[in-house]
Image (cartoon, rainbow, N blue to C red; front, side):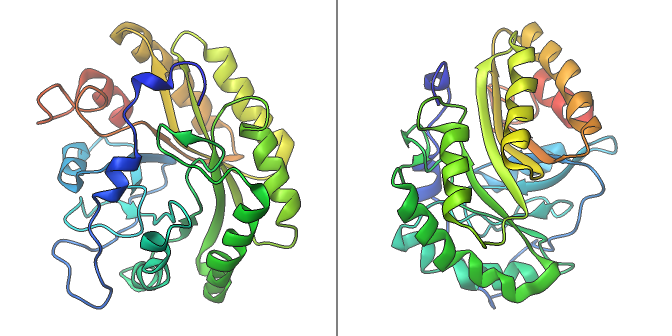
Length: 276
């Protein structure tokens, strides 16, 4: 991501530390319930912190962790698996983990393809060759068609970068993956909290360029607390009102972001995101 992404933590190290859990083994406190009708999601690395968001007024209904499985997270949200990249450490367990989550409880309803293949660093999976990304998506995501209408497939999530990144990359991917089952497209957005018009325009541009429902699997607004809260007061109702925006998730459930500095509860921004 261009602009101010340097202020956000890298996701690469977080993904590499995630546990591998073989399906078929009993997992503690894992039920994969569907959390309700809301679009709002929760990105996290530490599953324990998801429980801070369990509130009678919470608008969160789903969660993800840039990985294909989780243990000991809050049991009131739907877990959505992601195939972060085409690295062997990710792909070797992808099929088994997907099968586990599809059949657990009411089952996961979506699968997320690669994370930021259009950039290297700052959490991007660095799959700059679009043709190779298409090939990997066909090989690892297309087999999910076997689940029929039960599971929808979401495109790789692109940055809001310019040039060959962002929407340009996404359009090239969709052109190359002609015939693929792409039920929705995913994008990210990072910029100043005062740039609300740019946020709305960029998300609208993603939809207009692809003609598909949109998932915003990461968005971050840089600014002081008052600016970020004002940003949320404006964009959360807007996100909920657009019927072509299926789901969205603010970055992220960690200290200094949606959690307080001690990491033991929600920050003021986190409380607004959770319940507003």
